[in-house]
Length: 471
Image (cartoon, rainbow, N blue to C red):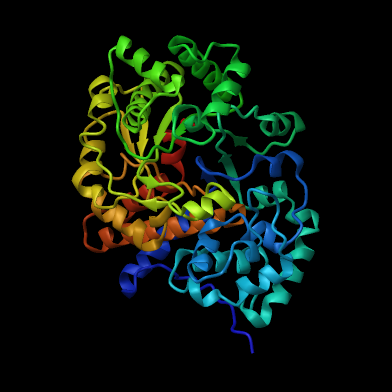
């Protein structure tokens, strides 16, 4: 017999009955608020074409590295799971890939993926039995049938999920055709882009030579000259802003920044485009460009996000066969106090600049990030990110940052996902964890319940709108 699928109404709330009762009341104030999703990686083509998804594997399994990285760790091949490679689509039969996934559900016990998936199965598709080997075909068929209906088209689900805004992330050499199509369609859903310039900033990025050439073609600038290169960024940022962008995003290996004299910066750029640069040159150039991006943000108002500290594509064989973003990125130790000082010396006291810091190194929360954000007007803390986007990770974030940075030097929650159907689940988890944290403060008489309710609403809705300038 299949196990029943249950979503307990008190999931993730504190175990103490008195504190749990407070959390329930606080949750009532936030559970139906609209979703603000100001940073993520969903595909804008979904909303531009509003085409039906074809099957459960291509929608829910093949794009989600949270899922297949766990399966890969247990010896399953990405090919068998329907993940496309550099050579093209996976040859796996979608149903067989789904059966394989269904038979491995025990691997996700205790992980945030199990919470998100249960929400998707129960709340989005209405299942009342759990996914396992015995129900694999039931799930695959019923999901396929649902996806063929108008109610499960991307725009209909966007509206059903009560998403007020969703931001995608694009390269500066993306022409944003899908965003243009969304705007021209007359649909009222708000899907915006974000400027991710890594391919034309990171000289060690495999796309850098081709991307730099395309960068010049799109802008008409001589991007092999320092001034022409900077002007090309200004032009593309302006175009992204016209297409709805309110933020930039920078996924650098470290948080290093630099503030070189103009002649030094120009000489460094000459080495970068000349091809004779060293690894140290590439790191220094990335560091200088964070400061240049901050300078441009003061001019154009785009909020700056820094996502450092990931050793990208750690599995060389997997990268060779499947490319980027295949679950092989690994967190590293990250310094912020010394790394950010050149940028902060120049721009940290600017109240008109917003820089949102993220980390994969939790040891930096109370030692570095909270004290920095609790002082510099330009800094805000992004939520628990990626490997720490879990109930435990969110609690650790609040416990280690609130005492120094408070709630209002943070920016609420963003889901940072490629898995569209998990967005409401991820936001629900964040809201439940936050009200649990606030309920404890109320129970300990450190905060009145009306203050906690106001704070919960701010964390879920007002702070992300304010931080990302989405008014």
